[in-house]
Image 1 (cartoon, rainbow over the protein chains, first blue to last red):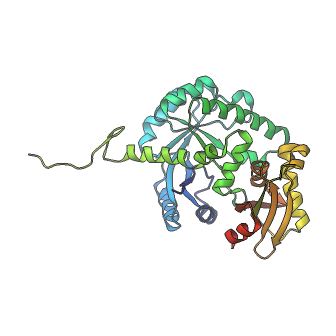
Image 2: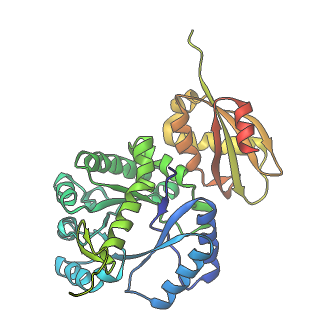
Image 3: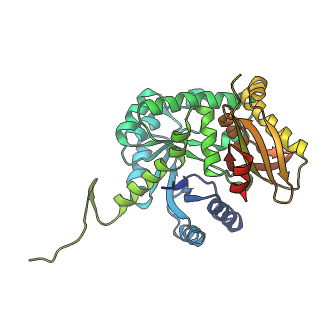
Length: 244
Length: 104
């Protein structure tokens, strides 16, 4: 069975329709099945409708995703309470340890993202991985910095990623590889995206899972939860009988 | 001596203009060297076999053991001859005959 590839972190400006259209067409040509553009300030119905229409036109499945960079735990909880049921994927950008820990243990969070290049501000350690493994949250790795950085900065980033990926594998935390690109020239074929994971210690099968199986599992799980037939994990309404 | 197993790769170049063969290969060498150093680059056994300027499809050869290294390095190429570019692997094969059959 062929894999359904996903790039859940494209950086498209919804207001720039031409670029958005070009990137979406290219993603379809490259063989992606799911793509997503993060919304940071709530759900914009019109923009979502335009994205969905553009994606459907070229045979892509558009995933509704929200990115949030909370300053405190309370901020995060408030955000999740407000938006969890509006989005299919919730990613928390962890900029402090307090937020990283709360996000890792909250079952409503799907992805943890650590954007900082500073070694001390990347909080994916063993404690974080243990919490994330219990709550089913995945670790997202953006590939763009690996493409644009050079020299010591890239060396430091690779070193951090190698350590974090090893911890994630040890604790069975799903790894999701995304591109985070907004320019056509930086877009890569799914298998090329996966091949970059070789640089930080994923083998071929794990890397391919990180661009297909793992993101697809998150999307499908959440779609099931958001469906009106969902009762509890593993239980859904199949058919409603007539009252006796 | 054990025979060295090889892999042939068909690469699609996306760039403005058409770089020369030399510029194309230099960009791959530069990427491999940046990621794996000069010793690592020397192990790849990289060489250009053929290129179709019209379709911008290049065929290169590498050793099987260094194939994952080369694959990552190709994905990391962002410019060729100082112009923004990207390389995509269209097909990989153990023989040129099978590669040309796959690429068409």
